[in-house]
Amino acid sequence: MVGTEVDLRVDNVAHGGWCVGRHDEQVVFVRHALPGERVRARVTSQTKRFLRADAVEIIESSPDRVQPPCPYAGPGKCGGCDWQHASLEAQRRLKGEVVADQLRRIAGIDREVVVEELPGASDGLGWRTRVRFAVDDEGRPGFRRHRSHEVHPVDECAIAHPDVNALGVTDTTWRGFTEVEAITSASHADNAVVVTPRSARLPALPPLRESTAVLRRFKGGRLQQVRGRRGVRETVGDREYRVSAGSFWQVHPGAASALSEAVLDALRPEPGDTALDLYCGAGLFAGALAGAVGPQGRVLGVESESEAARDARHNLRDMPWVRVEQADVGAQLREWVDMRVDVAVVDPPRAGVGEVVAEQLAELRNRRVAYVSCDPATLARDLGAFIGAGYTLEEVRAFDSFPMTHHVECVATLSRE
Image (cartoon, rainbow, N blue to C red; front, side, top):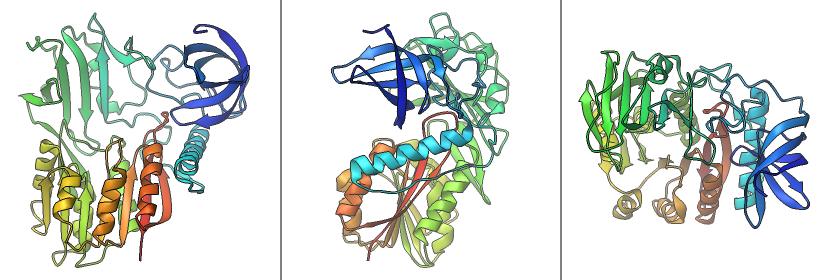
């Protein structure tokens, strides 16, 4: 049935940038559509249980539909943006519905979720400070098509930060490379380019601005410094953070500050508290917590990635009551099983924390947990585990950290007596 076109009406939104319709009683997940629309959809893949399709013609449109601001958005083109055809207000409403749906389906939690706008991208464009371009066989940079390894070349990325586009990655031919990641700072004049060569030999680099740092990525993610510094600097509040090119950092200019404030609001740390920052990255939340608990308290961070752990230690070196361990979170919590902890923030990768870590945190008898997540499905699963371990879910906040895409950042507040 792949390649067949069907007429259908789409109803609800689904996780991943899809809308859901039915054709001959079979479920169809449709991209480039909006709830309530009648569309002609071309089937792109088929399983025993459902079809996937692209809306190639809008027969009856939603009042939320707009003209996509990027010429590369649409069926068969760049697979990066999911919702450019929806107004920003509609995008946030749809994301809130997805988060609420995942909480209800996976964890049995019935909550209305409102997605909050972040400052710095009022039109939803020009916000992404880290962009990874794929390179085709002819050396042209672009983005992979949805659920495909094919590269769609682009001249510019509409959601990329202006300083990313100014690096000229899309104006350059990258023969001998498979990927080029462009990185800029939201608060400093720092730029970096991370290149991934096709072979062990590093090809000649095309002309780049002298101020741009260059790093080489090996298989497995290891980075080698080729030119300039290893990353960029970011400032949040009155604190400067060093962020290596391979370390995690929020890509929206307004996200780091907004999420730090949300975590402090959730945890309500007090002077003298012991606080944990698990999956701490470059130490963003540890820095905020350290200021709140003060020298009479302590903050313990855990990060498994070596370069990020080094960044965190460097960034927090002026606060001796902060300690950062490079370790697996579960293994480190087993060592701390007899320690008293007051509050904890967890900001895991997309895979989440799982039941074991939730139970380990409960054993530490901490009164409040802030769970930061970019995946509603794993968030819902893990919130169920925390509730099973004795916590109460107080609040779920959501932030539009990724306009034009289906991604959303959440901060859940958990407490217990």
